[in-house]
Image 1: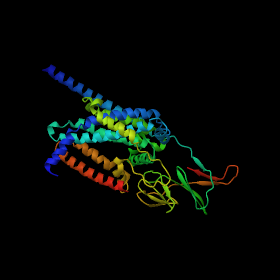
Image 2: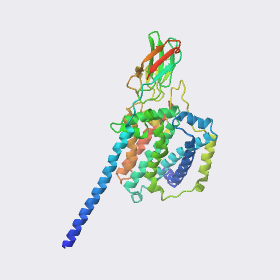
Image 3: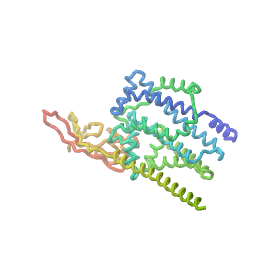
Image 4: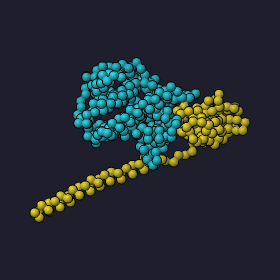
Length: 287
Length: 145
């Protein structure tokens, strides 16, 4: 790729309003999530989620709207992070390390919010994702049991704790991590009319995925962002594949907030990590 | 001069006390996590669950239930868990090959619950089965989970 083309892509990434779009998608996700929560019952998660699609008037629309806006929120947040990293290559424009660290804390929180949404629908994918996450956490020495009790405990408690965390706990953690950052920015729905229109129209036309558990189901693909992890879990023990491997990229992201040469090395590590993860995801998708 | 020294002493004492107070608050906060995790980690003991399979399965047949799969052969009936010993996904039975397959990471187990291949390391748990033959209770099987 020529240098000018690379600079063009860099400028495009930097100048796109990722943060604003992410926030608008989050607003839409929270609003539609509140509507969905009024009908959803964690005691009968699959029945409840499928009833939303099949029986409740406009249930499918609200569930789809919640699903797609949440996906967009996460994707735009990642875009925003990439843009910030690219724009702040200049050391004078970098954030203070403690503030950066707090913001990076919002990445796993957002990922867990998205993930618990998948688990809560309790279809074949959701059910499998939930038990896998629970068993991965339980593989952590000493901290596994308390962490699982705090986040999932699906085997013992069903969806109760996952629901509480999806609705309140993880949102609160995300909010705490981003509060200082977000209170400076205001974003109005009016400025992102096209995005709103496309999300709402998409939700009307495309139903959010739902895969019923059935006899003869011999292959389940996890959520798109966990495909690489699913593949990795075939080869190495859960603790290394499910805890250490993902943690390394979060640590590297945190190190991006430190001055060079640490920053440069962390960025190189992240690039390598993403390539490996992408390849693993492709292998998993082709199975 | 003496007054300056006194002021410095006071300021050192004050900052020491303020620092200690801050550490104490952090310590108290961390200590509060202990009861929280003890509370969250407690599991009320569960009664053993007995599931009745309300049908007579022919020899060589099987019944797929939510938590187990029941096989019936000449030698008798047995039930094995459908929870994969790798990461807990629900197994399905491939009748043609006579194996249980995990849909998540493709671990394979025999009808007897023995691990054949894949990332799972342990065999599947086996549950006790009692055959019910009395007409008044209806014929079938009782599986203790």
